[in-house]
Length: 235
View (tube, rainbow, N blue to C red):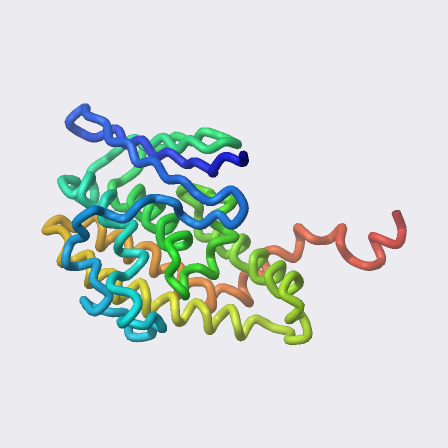
């Protein structure tokens, strides 16, 4: 029997206490396996601040899948303030990472992981990145990983006939809508602000990537000198 993938976030809080968030994912598809809350809060209902571009059928889906998976972590960390300094240890099979960072940065990493694996039809496109989760990634790392994921997805899906990045830009425009409207949900979930600010940080990448594509190529070109046809044929 193949065991599920496991990622553990351990928060070391300013008052000296710790909070642990364990996430389990399918061994093949990397979809989140966490059970939903027994009594989901009102802000997880699909019709509450529903994303403007949500394609889900309300007659068969009573709750937003991403909000359902967020409910537990948001409740556990609701006492935090955005700029509280927290220690965060992220334990994965491949590595353990520790960072001293703000509560909003830490929650942004958690919420991004949840959204990509929860079953939201839009954020599900980011599940390949979640499978190779990189906590606290920089803007440059995120752009690089997003472009790499998109090109690989196009190759695997057989849609490589279309060149350029229009589809990726369109995806990120839709992700911006999801992040904006999810932030409204989270505003109703807690009176403190780190969850909403965490969504704002996630959303900054949806506006960053389309604008950064051309500039990023110029910055990355020197790293790919060895991949020029002339260089490969000379080996």
